[in-house]
Length: 616
Image 1 (cartoon, rainbow, N blue to C red):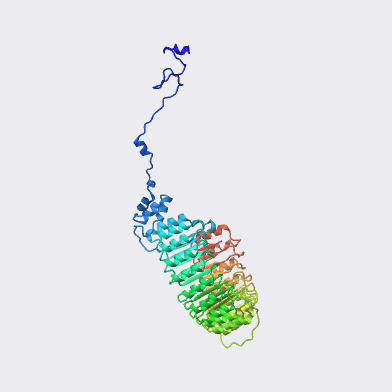
Image 2: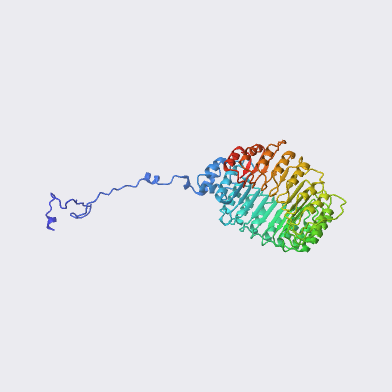
């Protein structure tokens, strides 16, 4: 302490230190050495500089008012690129709130699939097309639960595309009644709506469409578990312009909704599709009575409909304008039902029966006698139809029958027929595919009966040989235009040679895919005799470079547009020049699985034949 009191100020009290006396403190108090504090006085200018000067500080209401006054689509598109916030604000501007000039009424079309289908892309499309009236047609194919399209994206389309006329929403589980209701409210010109695998859409969304879209004429609902009878009743009450309705795999749809819709709209509906829905014969009875405008009817997988339902539908005599009928996997379709429909629909022209296991030859003969206007019949996997039923139908059918198709019918057996024919058929198109029992005997009978064939398709028939093909075509008095013998392994060059001599001037399409006995000789005869052929398929045959050379040096200057050589191991790089010569007219070339054609030759063909679509 004595050192302190004896300090006189001439010597240092603390080496390397200093004494700092703060104002108002007691003299003699020691403090450690330190730097002097820098005191900054707040400035009005510095506070102003710290504030954000961007337009983003504007409230959304002000930004909305600015953006809705943009004069053209170019300015709107430029502003949409500023930020997602601006893009979302632009998409929230409805057509009646915008002050921009619209150049057209919306004739643009867009399709978004998979990962390209997002809310952000829909918003950009909405803004970019709004100056031209928005989209007229939009298809969105999502990717199930990974889909990035929600109600927000659908709403942006609704606000920016008031002229939308066709909308397809497929596999979009995140889209619900909210988005569909905005479409209905903002797009009153909607004419076509296709909903597939959208579980979030319910009756509420359909009712909104019915109340606002009075021009709706085509409605498709597929695998929408939330749609039921109430939605269909709403459509029936509100959409008097409806012309086509398609319902498929909707478990909540039943007779109450379908029957009400058909009774209410049957006078103007022209196309009806009912596939795998829970209806009974009641719905078909209502259709048969009220469907006076129906021209096309498709019924598939209706397990609740029995024979009586089809019988009543036909005998109700209401569908006098029906022209086309397709029935698939309906156990209620029997011989009785087929004959009833034929007699009740006098204008019926086209019939297709697929997997109708209870339809036999008796039903076909009854159909032929009752449906006098019938022009075409297709039978697929109808195994109760035998040889006699098939031939009996052709003999009983009217003169208007032009096309007959038989696919995978195992009941057909190749039997010799001793029937005495008093007339000939006007059949122009014959197609028999994958019927193991169909062979030369059947073709011989048809050759005596059918003299006007122009389109012949015999595929996958091991029982058909050269003799059968020649017997079918030997009495043909009109020029054959199309011949398809794919998979007929017992057909050889002899048949091709005979056909080319007899019908070379009219033959336009010849397909021999998988005919193992076809060689270069067939191509030589084609090159000499077939002046009009433009589609030639010799895939998986024995043709080689020699045959291609014959085609290229044809004296008839073939105008081939499609040439298929897939799987022909005899074709090598030596055919490159000939293929290039043929390529002057080719639009399609198939050289897949031609193992002796090198990659360098393929590259050269791709470069030289730039206008041709090449499969390699």
